[in-house]
Image (cartoon, rainbow, N blue to C red):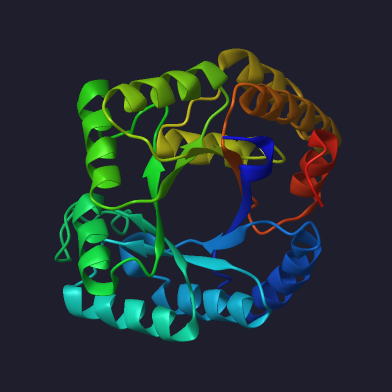
Length: 281
């Protein structure tokens, strides 16, 4: 993967209020100025943001940017998935992120006709052929529900071989975990690009909550340093920028095929990282 072929992209979640919609438009305009490969839009637990995801994706597309909706197994039937795919295809959307997804809080893993992401990838391919560039998720520190690292890797390779074009990882702060994950996936026959997911650090309590839920490890030295700043947001932000810049530099120097920034619908930290890394504008 050459430097010119690397993919840099941003992720949003669909706003829940009119104020949030207006804010995201401003954020998106700032981020669009650096010309990312695409913007992805998440899909809420159990399909709870289907309409918001669709509306946000279609608005981004109408603005002239590449948009990639998340599509989740949770709560999806073949009929509902087919309708969404047909709508996105008719609009000219060419990229999507296929995920197992999360059930609503307190619910089990039922409620849909797809149990695993590989089944959803197979359905998208059988329904729409090669129209969509399909992304799937990778977990360098392993999915929190995985019974073993080996089983988790097998699941990852299975969904890639079901028809994915590339993968985006969960965020992480341990570059070795990413490189080992990629190496092991290659050994199992996975040849698609595995783009590294990046979470800027701006709010320690929020980051700790997210990380505990998704299984992303915050290394002890980073966690203790952030906790030591207390409510000093400026120090948290400055330290976070240094840590994540160093991580991204190591990833790119090590051959990562791109970076996918989890923006949390904010622009400042991501744009500062972009500037520090000297990424193309």
